[in-house]
Amino acid sequence: MKQLRLKQKHIQDISRGKVSALLLADEGQSITVHDKLELINDDTNEAVGTLEVKEVVIRQLKDFEKQDDVLVHFVTQQGFNPTVATKRINFAFHPHAKTTPVERNDVNLYTNLSEVKMYADGGSRGNPGPSASGWVLFDIDGSVLKEGGKYLGITTNNQAEYQALKFGLEDAKKMQVKRVQVYMDSLLVINQMKGIFKVKNRDLWPIYEAIRELAKSFQKVTFTHVPRELNKEADRMVNETLDANQ
Image (cartoon, rainbow, N blue to C red; front, side):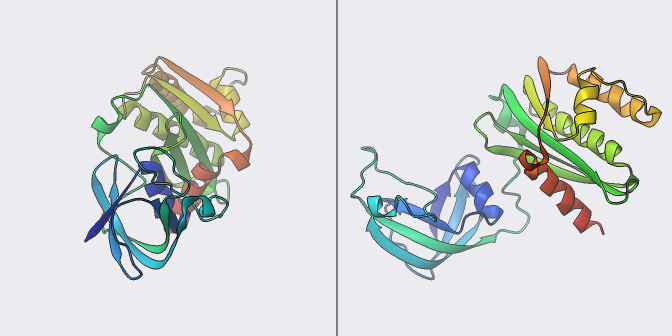
């Protein structure tokens, strides 16, 4: 079977359905409609699924530059050549069973990381009600390193928010990173972790103290409030987890 190697970021986008077309310039193999390409994660050397080719369009690279569906450039070793013969393939993605292309569990892959960005969110349908936590860890360039969601049963929104922060920091600790930038849309949690607000709810004390102790595992942890629209990935993990458990 023909193979196609892509970086982690593009694997993530394809696995979520954000990508359905790729631009391949001088990639060195014949690709036609109905071909099946083995999709390889170039960062992990893992086969994550197959791309079933639905359409192939061949033009010069420059003719695709303003197309909305141009998502990946494979350029020649000599550099960007706008006149090189280029294929745009539209495809359907079929993931392999038991693979998680948006999550890499091998700690060795993270040993060179010094800093990550973490987005965390929690939600309760009822408050209290069925609750879940979601978190996503990015490298500094914005590529997803790991994402997770956990169903919590019946609890409050604030409990779910704090649990998300704890789970995310635990994953960052496993990656052996030194610094974590935390982003959440819960102003309460952010201001309590920064010491601006006091933790008045006794039910939150144990997890608040556990997070403070966990934060000591890093050289630095910063807490930043963001609007909900900038926390969509973590919110997505919350809702996917809730939907899967109801």
